[in-house]
Amino acid sequence: MVCGKNVAAELANRVCFGVLRRAATALLIALASGLPTAQALGEQLPTISKEALPASGIETYRNIQRGGPFPFEKDGVTFGNRERILPPQKRGFYREYTVKTPGARNRGAQRIVCGGPATAPEVCYYTADHYASFRTIVP
Picture 1: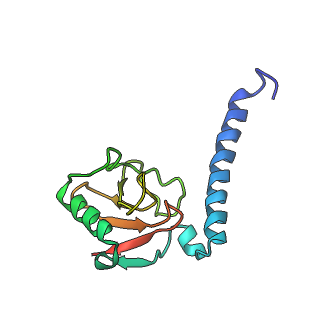
Picture 2: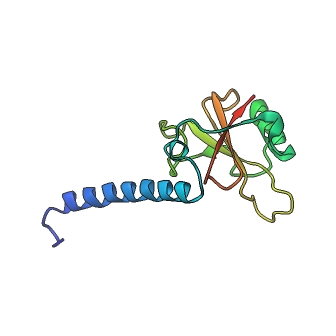
Picture 3: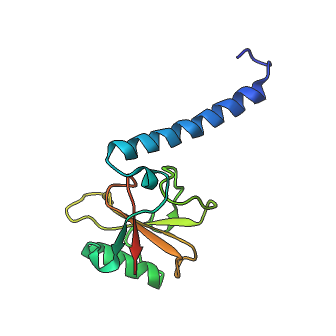
């Protein structure tokens, strides 16, 4: 695009294509990893009971219900749902929390993502693979 000729339209197209590219990439990753199409689109996610979470996941889930304390500085930050696997919500609805991974030197790949009020979430999801897939936590 030549500078000064419809720059706003070009910028809008780039943003639109960027969003579409990210959504298509998330869908392809989900499909390639064997996830059903519905999960890739954020519908009918599989479930996991609270008791079936790893021990550190149960501890994280309890801490969420109590409002803390959390071992990692990033616990409780907004989760952007860029992968578009979870049901769409307004920004700020989802927050992420680290599930300690035994032997990991960093935060590891496990997370719990909750939506709704901080200490009384409406819904929580568990991911063991750093947002590639999610399971709805059934209390």
